[in-house]
Amino acid sequence: MRKVDEANGLSGPRASALSVLVFRGPQSLGELAAAEGVKPPTMSRLVKSMQAEGLVESRAAAHDQRAVRIAASAKGRRLMLRGREKRLAAIRELVRDASAEERKALETVVELLARSLGKR
Image (cartoon, rainbow, N blue to C red; front, side, top):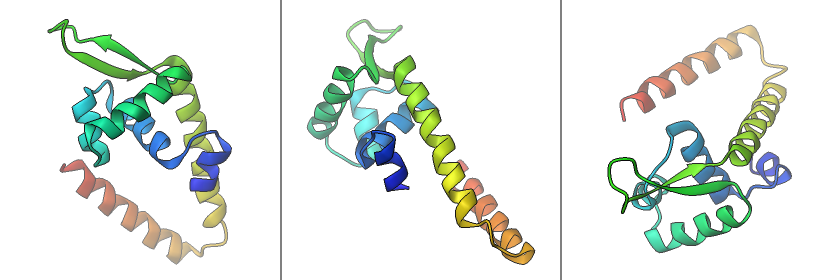
């Protein structure tokens, strides 16, 4: 999947951070850093580079004008959704030759992961 993301113009950390913003919604810098398991200064540098490319934008929070929320821009959202489709196509290709039994086993694993991740 890393190769797919890189072909789409995103490094692993950038793809991951942008994914959080697209699929979870706007985040504070601290929330985004925590979601990615990095320190705020590291996330700050990443966000600044993505802002320079027009992938994310900072906005004042509605409830507190001093608080800043980071959100995916329209360009960033399009890039992430396009990348998601390419990753899904790569996964489909990987399991193309799986037997019916293997596909059922994969389905079970995916359901288990979705259920487990949904509890977080």
